Length: 339
Ligand SMILES: [Zn+2]
Image (cartoon, rainbow, N blue to C red; front, side, top):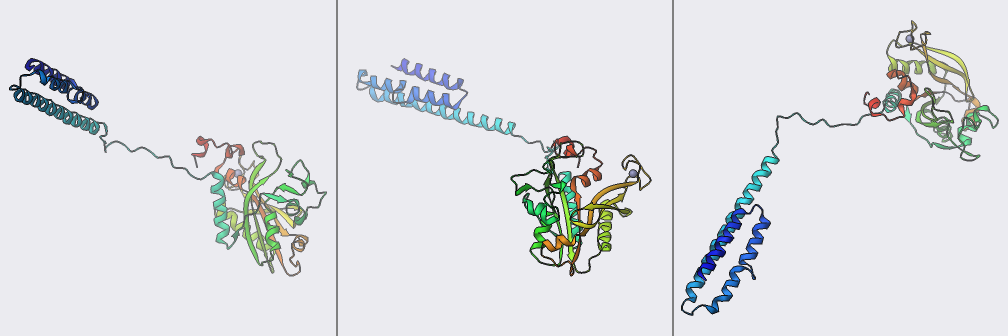
């Protein structure tokens, strides 16, 4: 029995020394010290031991048990220490390494252009008012002096939802809605998305953005329009920017004009950017047609006003010298990262 005990002890210690994981140590504990373990089994053989020998043998078994337990505990502590050290080595932080660069998002060129336009007009005391993108035919056309048979209503230009509802082709219906509320005077700009059934090319898209402006008050004249828009051009394109108005026709203004700005690339001498003319077309404008005022419930004998509309993409393209509008919509990160 004594030899048997020695053998079990030796075998257990050998296994403990060879263990490299906590689970293995646990298995060893169960297989030697557990209820069905080898030491326990040995104790069951006590009945074959002479009674006077029993305390001595019992003591030996207990000693062996204590030794094995002590070694198990030691091995466990050593393993835990090793694991901790490895973890520390793995998780070491080298504070001298260069930092990882975070990718921070930023504004789209359209948004930058819109914010610039809004800042200029809000600075002049204008309100920013938005309206629905799906609009009644009546607001998109009729109330803006575009009667039922007007060519602008052609289905080739307009997305019709049904005969009364369209995707707005301009932001001007927001003006009609604001005038109808009857709160005067009005100084507003209305930015937003508009829709035309155009084919996509370098200068056209079925969906683009406009900023529309409207001023209604007593004694508003063409001089107010010119002064306001000249100031806008200077703030937008630089202090030396000159403006020029060419007669034009829009149904909802009379008289109507298109405004050009002096080329901010060549200063008006003529270059590739301005196609040699020295001028760049920038927006449409005019004095609000008395009929439009009347239709929106404003007395045209007491009030006058002016309106203008500028394409946001056009501003963005000019400002950043981009020659293809499609780039603005492709969401190509290599393009967008440049702004
Ligand atoms: Zn030029």
